[in-house]
Amino acid sequence: MTYIAKPKFHHPSLPKNALGYTHRDYEGKISTLCAGCGHDSITASVIEACFELAIEPHRVAKISGIGCSSKTPDYFLNASHGFNSVHGRMPSVLTGANLANRDLIYLGVSGDGDTASIGFGQFAHAMRRGVNMVYIVENNGVYGLTKGQFSATADRGSKSKRGVINADNSIDVVAMALQLGATFVARSFSGDKEQLVPLIRAAIEHQGAALIDVISPCVAFNNHAGSTKSFDYVREHNEAVNRLDFITSRAPITVAYEAGSVEVVEQHDGSKLVLKKVSADYDAHDRIGAMTFLQQHAAKGQIVTGLLYVDSEPEDLHTHFNTVATPLNAMSEKELSPGSAALDKINASLR
Ligand SMILES: Cc1ncc(C[n+]2csc(CCOP(=O)(O)OP(=O)(O)O)c2C)c(N)n1
Ligand code: SF4
Ligand SMILES: [Mg+2]
Image (cartoon, rainbow, N blue to C red; front, side, top):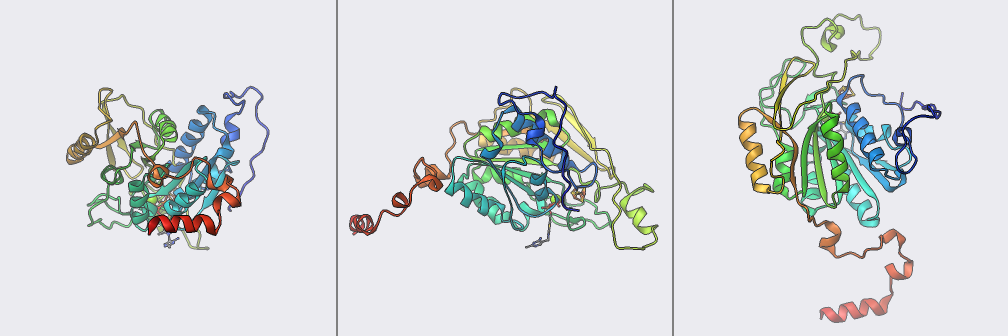
């Protein structure tokens, strides 16, 4: 099942934004992800942020790679431009689109596998080059779509659903983005809409490379080992009459906690995440301070969430390239290809 049409009608009293649009105008198709998947909560936050900002959907380009996470652009902003690219290649496809039309808002959606494994090089270069985009990593620590292998963001020592212990060190995409020069770096949790929606809004408004790492529990491959309703149990006790997998539906995990406080979040498999929300007096304009803060809390087993770093005067790739203000796709053929006389002049100036 890849497509289910949504009914177009809605209640006449639905709230409207400054453009007169309702939330329905920012939705997409009905999600085919597992019930309770953290990625669906992120979709809801993207819809909310675009509604609140009263964005014209046709001004957005949503580009993704491959994975459950990369499927999500199909579930929001139906009327936007969209391109579901190749595994790990979202950043380069997005960079090309951005160079051709700088007037769109670019939403890059990726997973931890898509970003920290096959797409690690592409992620790094998009960040260091300052591509003007919102780069969302829907981070569940596994390759959800291909049945739960460890991704490069899985903690060392964590246990897979098959009981295998991860012996490799993990990659922290937030630490990487800070080191690579991203001008907006944040982390959140899929179930913390109160924190995530404002972060997405701010990232959309930021004119540079904005990275949001969103921890997003996978209910299928992070489920409770001892439960008779768990993925493992049902598979083992189910007479195989076909080769379909059975996924138990779970309630999405939600959290609400104050700035400056620490929240312990229990995931579906019983494992615990210790989230530390930055306090109101945290200085988000100090890159080195953010790196130190991140590492100090990681050493205590705490995952820092919130806006960790922002450069209030960011430069983007177009500034680095000194491109014209008019989007290339809006220029005439004569402007784009001024002829041999112009080329001769340039060549002469270089001799
Ligand atoms: C070139 C290539 N290699 C491998 C795959 C198989 N593959 C599909 S999705 C995926 C991993 C997805 O993991 P992640 O990005 O974390 O997304 P999730 O499903 O967890 O949201 C892999 C390895 C592929 N589609 N293309
Ligand atoms: S396999 Fe995991 S990541 Fe994929 S849809 Fe199901 S819960 Fe979400
Ligand atoms: Mg993943």
